[in-house]
Image (cartoon, rainbow, N blue to C red):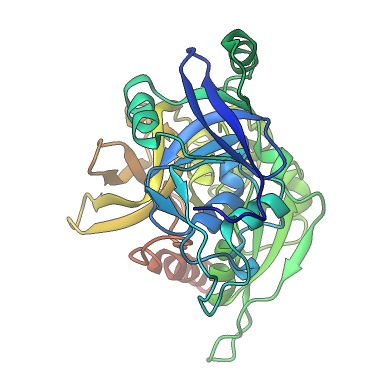
Length: 375
């Protein structure tokens, strides 16, 4: 259901293989293009739409009804909506009586100029993406001549080889103060290379007594090292890690010199800096319920994930050990540097949205900094 205040217009999603999925455009905007991926999350839709990792992507929500608890700007993960578009089977417009909600989802998307479709057969669309892989797609007004929309879809650049991280990075450097530790010791100073970092990740780092300096993605590593940080954090972000030569250069400069922790895109960048290779997954991992197993302890975490690329475990050089694996498809989920103070994970341990199983990884980074600098 949607409210009368939000305009609905007949529109359609056209994939680059010619498949068309009709629906109704929500709000005044009807045109959008990007890589079409599906996410299995049943909640956290606002965090998903504002996550910079979804920049350049049209997100298909597999849950039948989305929007039942409204929206609140406090949970936004960036200053603006980052997804290129959103597709729903049905948008639910509640009475907005949730105590944290100040708006409903259709109005939120219209106010943030996000192109979205409702009334789409998302089950058929998801099955198509699982069978054929993620496809580029174009959302536009319904047109009885499908060739026009098909041409638009086929002209969208491939995600492979595309540098999107620099386009969502902060243009300026800024600092954030961490929580003061109870023992009265000064906080560690950590450099964060902004590849599209989420606010919730910054919040977790600060909660673990780390003072942060957040640097634009293309900052030379010499400039960052000149500030004498205690360590480096490489975060999430959108697109293909392989063309990010600037981030790979920064990771190379820090690895072996200072402690380094990477997640998602940062995990892939660290692997590339160490000589491994990455590859594109057929339809990626996008959801809040991906089981990951620790290869040493057998412990299983349920994790939040959003990535279309992965590290190839057959290309790992000596000194780089796989530590975590995805139970669903056996893709590599974690790395340990056996000769350096460094580790990385493919998933999002800050859990916004998602389970809190792996929050302890932030404390592990803090302990690594302490061991390195107090040894």
